[in-house]
Image (cartoon, rainbow, N blue to C red; front, side):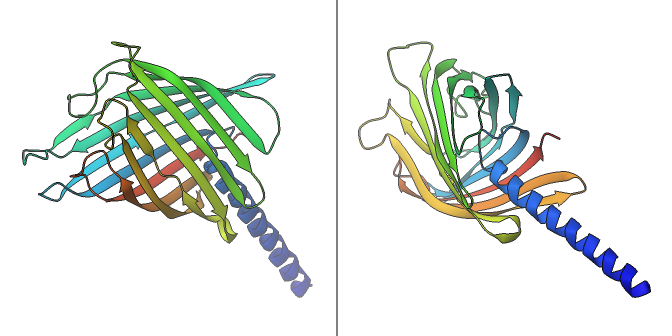
Length: 261
């Protein structure tokens, strides 16, 4: 009887462990999908190294919560990006630290179950920068679009926006492109590449694009009842807007997830 009880307990624990691993694997997929139907609160730290003659460092921590709302035929995703910036002075002066310009994007997406999802809407820029070196300190507006595709092992897609300042709507100012691809491994591990490409349309030809290439590794943990997504990346800038800019970037992201019950 004791042996039977032990076997039943071991089987129950094994089922519970399997369910947790399956749940974490599904959460790993959802974590990389910008159109996942759950609230997420990511903190993303981006560091660029060896900038200028003094080998300075730029550091940006993005607080970027995503809040979805579901309606009968539509989902609305509101995505904020609030940057906390430490910007080096290439002339050798002191770093400037503070808040950069905040962005808010609203994606409208059809409410349907599909392996391919997309969203379209406005992106708004708010002049929250505490110093002119940390942001444009101007209101801006433009279009934003995101598309994702998923299958058993992959999630991939593209997020893009273009912002014009309200001081001169006829002149393009800046574009952001973020392609992303994720490959899922056992036990909620995954490989990821999601470089942030930026274009400054006011810059001279040949100095408009900042284009890093690279990849990273991530995993979803469940601590208590809280799913937490953690990933680290390394990127190399193959195209730069400033020849004095650093070639190497690193990224560390901590993302709190609130799946719907």
